[in-house]
Length: 240
Ligand code: DX5
Ligand code: ZN
Image 1 (cartoon, rainbow, N blue to C red):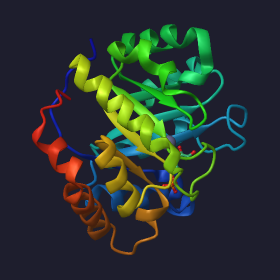
Image 2 (spheres, rainbow, N blue to C red; image 1 turned 120 degrees about the vertical axis):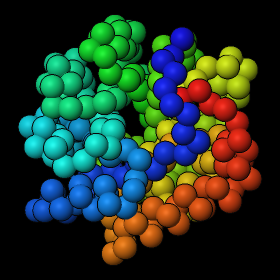
Image 3 (cartoon, protein in one colour; image 1 turned 135 degrees about the horizontal axis):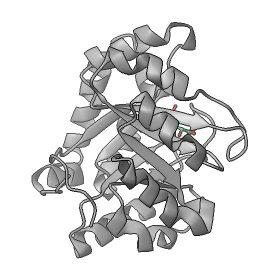
Image 4 (cartoon, rainbow, N blue to C red; image 1 turned 90 degrees about the horizontal axis):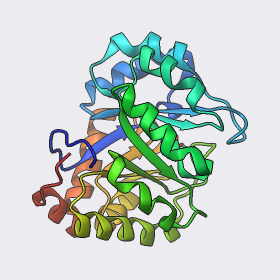
């Protein structure tokens, strides 16, 4: 079974990838003051995705700036070599991709053995059935709503049925994993995803482009709450 943690109906997780890298500390403080829930950290290795972002040293440097949970998304071909460095840097969750194939189960156990929450991510072209066998072992299912590698892309609406399917499985099984969406999330697409069953929203460009970050987070919360399924999700007790 997945590890149950405090019930929280909605999580807003700004992605630091969209922040100003020349003033990273100030950007983290901006997210913290905006009362966002998690900080999403996109780690790209230049191999699994055609881009490179930042690594454990950067995460360690920003760790003292906030108590927000650090949600580390590993877009990496060999994520296992980074588990301990990120655990030591202060990550709270480590998410690996189901596209890595056979050794996904081992990867998940390694994350668990480090005492961190386990995330499993799935890219837009990958069928949702590929994550089904792993659902009892995970804390977070990260459904990519763009092809990973770059911030600022447009939401892919064809991913919505995958969210619906994941939500249906969660309801049928009574499992407690969160359903997180990532890529092209703004107030409109967040509401669409909430209606489909998502409860955790990663947003980069749409939040960091706003001068008033706190208001932007607040508006996104309201957009999710106002979506009908979002309201249902708030009253449903997901045990995480
Ligand atoms: C995409 C990353 C996302 C990205 C989201 O590869 O996994 O987390 O930063 O950024 P926006 O919200 O700009 O699409
Ligand atoms: Zn991400």
